[in-house]
Image 1 (spheres, rainbow, N blue to C red):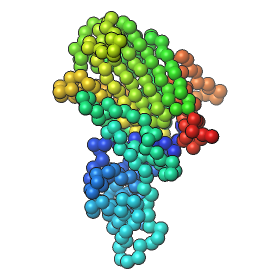
Image 2 (tube, one colour):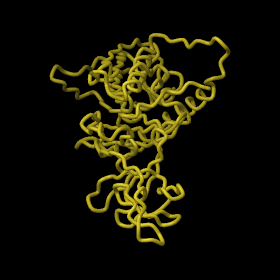
Image 3 (cartoon, one colour):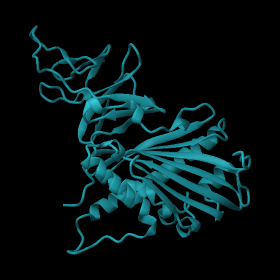
Image 4 (cartoon, rainbow, N blue to C red):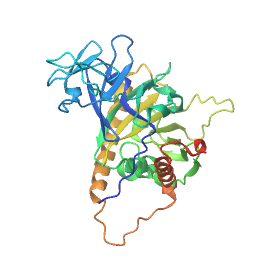
Length: 354
């Protein structure tokens, strides 16, 4: 059997972009749990319930809404937003056990988060922030792709950007990405890994050359924050060679782009890759937005193909095979340790365990 990264259940995970949740029922699977989502009619808040009718396990996501109640499309069992069954066909008495699970849900920074573990431990205040996703002055494009691979492979992929040189040439990869050493900082207690790569004199990849108009050589900064288990932030900066931010933080000749990924395990060997590209420049230029959207999706699909292929190789190695890791894997290895600890400790960060 290929190795699979275990799930930390007592954690928040992104289940949808905010714009995906409306009055049409939406089905998703998180940590192996089938979920149905919709937005309540009275207050507009997202609702997340277990996506199986208690009667014959019919998917509620394939059913319909009557106000804020889901009416099962098979036999009409009807559930309110708490998951309680309020009507069964052919009888007045509703069985006491007729209820589907409802899950804690929070909406923050244009993302809908769900908590699959112990509801008593669901603190929305612990959700990491990505304020650029819906702050004034910022514009975001994004999407979501499903990957048929262990979610740990996607975490590895995002924390080692040297693969851009080889997998994403023609989009975001240049020789300097692989050649430039990284610095890594790990906050085990907070469950955060930071990986930085600063390139003083680099080729400008098409992703930035075509969207910003910068030509020639650039300085390029990639500063990663991974908040285990779900949120990944890449603070990206490019500018003409020699241009650095002023002591007050001003950077009139630089372009700052926030690249956000939410890594949500769907089931064993399957992961949702939510991706977003945010900018505070050329915010009124729809052509730039479409170029960034289509280009980043092409990059994501290259990752999807690579990870799907890699997943199929797991478990096929010869007896005695040992995985080799090098300096560029420091961040990914730290993330693996943190994920393992979150699982062992019931999903609670180390500093909260007494």
